[in-house]
Length: 259
Figure 1 (cartoon, helix red, strand yellow):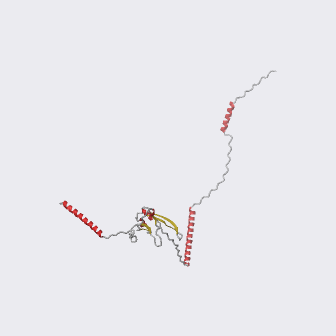
Figure 2: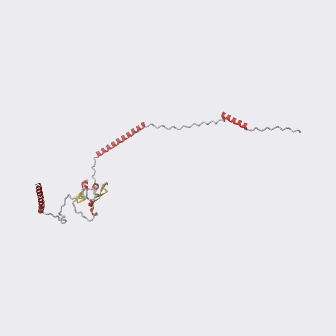
Figure 3: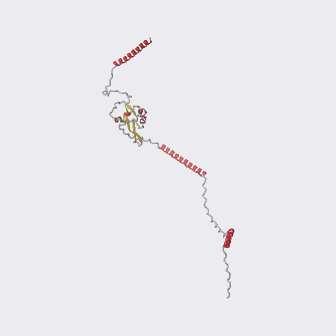
């Protein structure tokens, strides 16, 4: 009995799923068909505003964009799709400013992640919904976004300063002079006090003693002739030499011959 019940339950489920599928098919069978006649209907073709097709710079009515060349979009791009170059320009008021020179965008390597748009501090970027970007070469997918010529900046004349009341101006001058004199007096007093402290704390250096004239050295007495011991030694040596010397033979007197 159990197998028969399972058989009929599975058959009922299959029939139900078949009816559901046929209902969907019948509904679509009677629905009117819509065929896009592209590219003949380009003028009336509607693309969603959220469609991301190509990165572009936002220009105002005067032809200016908001990009300041900070490079945040270039750093946040995961594929290195964006390359920025900047330059320094002289403004009419004499100051210097860094401006965008070239904004290069490679559509062929873009992942359309929109990090560049969301992280731009000036809201200078957006994605257009122009999906017709097919080309025959990859080089044509590299585009310069700031292709429009920049309008010249007109020199803004500085507003004239309002004239000041003469009495007020004289009062300001007097206050400035008094303040300068007070500061000068304080500096002189501080310098004098510092000089007095240095003179009281630092001991005077002793005067160098003048070299005294050296007294003439007494002449050394001449050495005496000889000391007694030396005299005795000399005497003994002389006696010894005399004793050793041979005595001369005495000549005997010759006998007188007889005449």
